[in-house]
Image 1: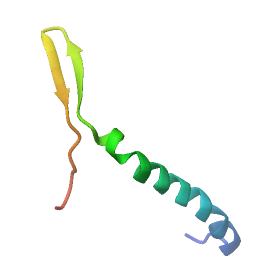
Image 2: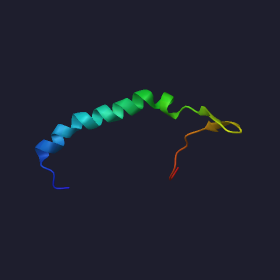
Image 3: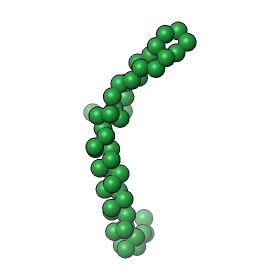
Amino acid sequence: MGKPVAQARGEIGLVADIYRYYADNAEQLLAPSTIDVDSGSASVEKRPVGAY
């Protein structure tokens, strides 16, 4: 992308923190949840999209 090497190196820590957050919280973020709707309740499940 034409980014100077110094800027790219500066972003490494930020990117690592973002990946670490999602790795540490994956179980909670991907857990099924139940929501109330007008006619009862609904279950929300998160599934991968794309190639398996």
